[in-house]
Length: 331
Image (cartoon, rainbow, N blue to C red):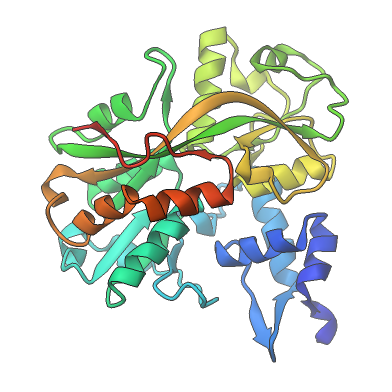
């Protein structure tokens, strides 16, 4: 039985990633773990399950836990993971008491925001839903989450998020607040053996990609770029192979499983054997209902994002331009 329990270093060696990345996966809820004494241990079956979830297209009979996973983060030092479907299925009004909050998004900036919020109010129960941008905005529209985040690029207007919010939340006035700007681009193997330079390389027949899931901001960016170039995604090798996170696609590139993936600069930071090619400055924004702006804890969230302390913490993780952090982008 002991042989089925792997240390963080053994998991890192198996996945060919840095040990710190293993801890990030555990914190983000992508790997379930347990404590043996003071040591973190991951079951071998969980590692194999993680690879199954991220290495190929999901079977129509299998649903990824990311689509519905809610992670309790009110105690940021805890490793307890809650797959809380009952909470997610409640309506907006069921959770509007100010004691429970569901924040939708995958980015580490939301961990920082949560830390600041719980430092001010440690009685609020905060949950994280790891749905992608498009699905998160739709969940906000449906009243299934309280706060959404997005980086949805519109190729026709060259703007982020505004056109999507207008169309996806009809009849619900919303606020869009800038969290920050960051670089998005290609992950390629170290040394860039295929000589990949930009979006036009997606037209080549010698390139195999690994894609992000439908509904993620990264997938929307790719599909918009392909639309503008007149390229049909299904004709690209690997287009139908979907993963649920930047870490997952970066790990596949690191293992030699594809020539190219798309993600943020920070997303491949701890993955060895990866070269990042910056192609786009994207905007990562927070969205709430206008009707909530003067309520708690939403009002406190908006105040936090504008503080120097939040901006400093955001800068410290690297890869973020905080020049516009806290600005109201659209009302």
